[in-house]
Structures are given as C-alpha cells and as structure tokens.
Length: 500
Image (tube, rainbow, N blue to C red; front, side):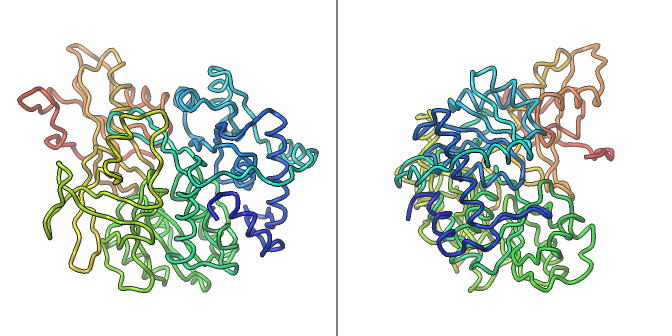
C-alpha cells in the first residue's frame, strides 16, 4: 500500500464505526470521514480538478482538516499545506510558486487568503463550518479514488534555507505512507484503542505524519486542539482519555508551568520533536506526566521522522535516538567524506522517507540531495551504541515554539525600513519558547525610530510567531575581513519583559 488515501480506505474497512477524529464535542467516525471526503472529492472534480493539480490548504486543527486533506488526495490532487497565520504576501508567494488553482481557507484567515488567491487567479473556498457542512451533504459522493503511484507527489510542504526563499518539499505517497506506518507500528505502537493528542499543527510535517496519518494508519482516534493552550490541552487529555501525547518542547514547558494536576491514567507515552528538548525539562515532564518522554528528529524533507528513541531500547536523554525503519544516517565533512569516530559532522539521511526534491528548484534539489543522501544542515555526533546527538545547526534557522523562523526573511523586511542601515536577526535562548528572535540593528544617523516601532513594522508583514520580540540598536555590527556580518560574535543584551 503506497497511496496515502489508502490509509483511510483501509481504516474504514476495519474500523468504520470507531471515532476517527474529534474536536471538543464534535466527532466523526471513520465511515463518516470517508463519506465526507468522497463528497469533497466530488466537488473538486466538478470544479475541474485533475490528477496532480495543487490545492492549498490554510486551516488550523479543526475537524474539517482531515476531510479536506484526504478529499484532495482522493480526487488525485496534491495537498499544499500552508500555515493559516501567514499574511497575504506570504500566501501569495506559495500559491504562485506551486501554481495552486484553489485555496481552502478557514474563516479566521480568509482576509489574507482571499486576496492572495485573487492575485494569482485562484479560487478561495472558505470553510465556514455550517456552510461547508451543508455543501458537503448536498454533494453526491465520488465513487472510488484517483489513486496515486509510489513516486507521485502527494503533499508539498514549504520550507526555507538561510536565504529565506521558501522551497516546496515534494513528498511522495511512498514517503508519507512509509513514515506513517513506521511511526504507527514501530515507534508509537498504536492501535484502534489509542487516542492521540492533536495539538501539533496539522499543516506541519510533525503533526501531519505523526498525528493525523499515523492515527489513520492505526485506526486510532485523533483529538484536535485548534490552538495550543496548556489548560485546554490538559482538559482534552482528561476528557478524551488520551494515550499518546505529541508535542514540542514549548508545549511541555507550558504544561509544567500550568501544573498537571490530577493523574492521567490512560496516558502511556509522550513524544517530543520539532526542537531539542532540554534534559532538565525532559526529566521534569516525565515526573509530572508519569510516563516516558521519547525524543525524535526529522525535517519536512524527510516526511519527517528520520531518527527516534525506540520504545524497546534504553532511552538516552539528549539524544535523538536511532535511525528509524527504512532509514540510514551518516555523518559527513564539508566535502561529503565520512567523519571519524567521535567527531562531529553534518547529518545526512537516506531512505524511503526522503523527499523527491524541491518543487521547481533543480539547483536546490541537487545541492540538498547528493549521491542519494539528503544533507540536513545539522551537525551531530554518534556514540558507541549508534545513538545520534544533534550538537548545532549549520544554518541560521531559529526555532521559536516549534515553528521555523528564517532570519534572512526578517532581515529583508527590516532593510526596507528607511531608518535601518544594517540588520542581523539571531536566535537567543528563551525558557518559554526554546528560542526567541532578536533583531540587532544599526540605524541611519539622526534616526528617531524606536524598538517598538520597528517591532510593529515587522509584525504587520509576517505571521505572529516570526517577528522579533527583542529589538536592539548598536553602533556597529561585528564583521569579518570580507565585510560579512559575524552573527556568532553578536551579543544580545537581556531583554525587557514583553508579552508574547
């Protein structure tokens, strides 16, 4: 089975009457989810969607997300996941780059999505819950499914390098199915009686594979939380009897700050990814939750899981674990030669999970995929037992609250401000978000702009998680002999408290 929609088709055959997804008091059985995807697929086909056409999806974790997701796949389309927090300009870039003919957007982001769609000549379907449900019930269901082949693109996830230019990682049916089955069968070991916590964004690779596709692959229930809040998350864990918690370090930190309260008798496993989990936080989470927390590693380009602390072997705190089924890892030097034992090298990945390439980016694809190995840009070491430890990132990527923020993108915006002559955006450690974004700036002589004004200037143009909470002015930025700004030599002063 290598067609992604086939995961749902198989679950319907075996678990038709079991709850597939719930959001608060609303829920869908596998039979109901199947019926709604068939009706949505029919609507897409009636609109002229053909195999391989791209459909952008800008939805939070709502009960209609899996309907839209599997409906697009059933109709033979390609899902292009977009963060619903993106602004119009950011959405416009994605829609134009992938050539999407339709964007499905939540009412909460329609003010950004609709004009973005209009700019590229695409349609925008807003999923008002009442109207969308009525539309589906009125549509005749599509019979069968336009199944994709192993190497057909199923999903495009937009990511970016240090250049800040977004690139669409093409994930095939084989990539996503193999990663979901590996996660369900060998990592989480979930089955029909399990309930997975769905607080990770489903537009992101982590949530899409490890929560949504894994739950469907196992016939489990996925309980959704549209926006993570510690108190609401704990209420969900208790109410829906969650057995597997999936989160990023900031979620664990928020739960601990809130206080776990009553024991969670059905919770049997917790998983962390998206960013490095501090060892102290890991141990505190295990004490309070009463379960083992297993850390893994992956990227959008690897569907995403490449490495994981396996449940049947000793867990090593601070380690990303061992390569998962069907995946090989190695450490290489800058010239791609293997590094010696105990040395640090760039983590390279090969396996059924590695993307086809970047959409319409042959040069970027050739650079990232060399001799069949995907070069992650992360530096790591491996111990005598084969466990890998990420020690640093080659890229300037900042991970705030589990979200990727690319400094160059923010710097480009800052350089557009008339008072800014030089800008450097860096990540600084932050107890609440893992990393916080800091902008260190040199202003033009006589400039009177304030840090608050520049912070607001950026905030108006990017998603809320991207703008710098810390803005500081300096007389000069450190530079090397060639004039390149040396970010490693930038010192950021302790910030004043700001609301997030």
